[in-house]
Amino acid sequence: MHSAGFATVIAVGAGLAGSLQVAVMGRFGERIGSWEALVFSLAASALLALIGLLILRRGAGRLAAALGAPKWMWLGAVMGAFVVLSITVAGPAIGTTATVSLLIAGQLVAATAIDRFGWIGFERIPIGWARGLGLALLVAGAALTLRK
Image 1 (spheres, rainbow, N blue to C red):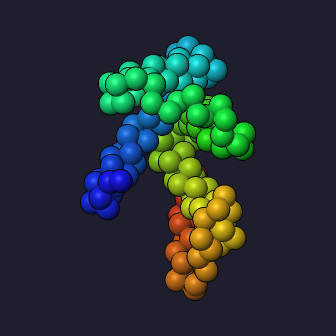
Image 2: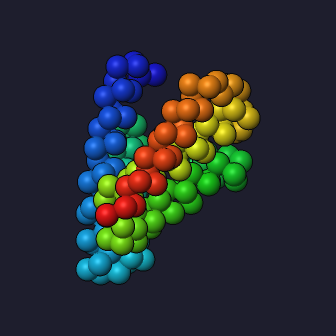
């Protein structure tokens, strides 16, 4: 288990990396094709993750347990591939800012639904007026980034 401080730092780092990823993958997709960029990116990511696993766990750890997990849990991989493909296509078409803004707005809408309805086994968290207003403003702000 990691501390909240470490989790906060790594989440901010992921946000910074995600914006850079949108810009880089957009250019990569223009250069070699969106699907080719997707496959290369996921293969390189899988290789790096495997190397990290082998070093940190001194072996494959519980990787084989993934095959016995409920199949719906594999959706994480499907969603990850969809995110990488979508940023590869959207970045050059609408720009990095709009792509990231819409990605974040979509994530917040989905996260709110997950919290509100307790999907995937999470505790239900009600949506108060402040949370609802914040979400509406973020979605409106994301839509405004489409204007040039």
